[in-house]
Image (cartoon, rainbow, N blue to C red; front, side):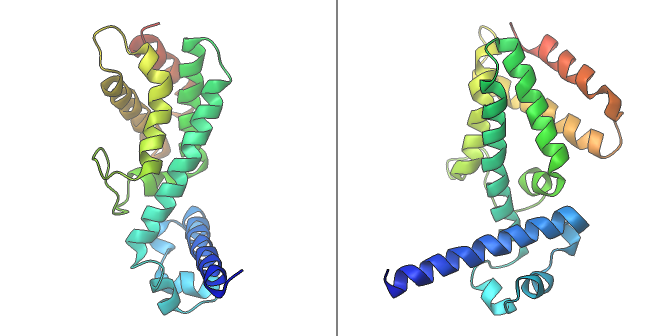
Length: 192
């Protein structure tokens, strides 16, 4: 292994450590607790080393969001692949989405609530974000209904899931009705 390869591997390792530490701190104490000073202390590197990887908190949030999008896409695909029936597939997808949001609130915030400097719904949208949308579209496109553009249907369904996730977490929807909401969403929106 060359010196350059070793340095690149070490740099990638530091970057993964920064992202993992930011994510852990955000999940434990919220994103306000994530500062470059605290991260530098926790990873035992100087702030200039941290800034050599990320220009600031915004880029760190973006890195967490991209990691989260990759994880969400995998969770959505795994849930929907386990079902053969389109209705069951869409229901499993909705449950997996809401479960991901509940289990990873700081990551979910990085993906959809905070400014991570990432472009959505544009040509320059990063691949992990496009792939997370594609994971939704793969199951939802088949139940969009005749004359309804599959991507548009997926956007509306996703917006409904996002609303449920954020309103439930904020205590504005009763948590005990999640299953009933999922059922209503699937029954009323999906053409089966």
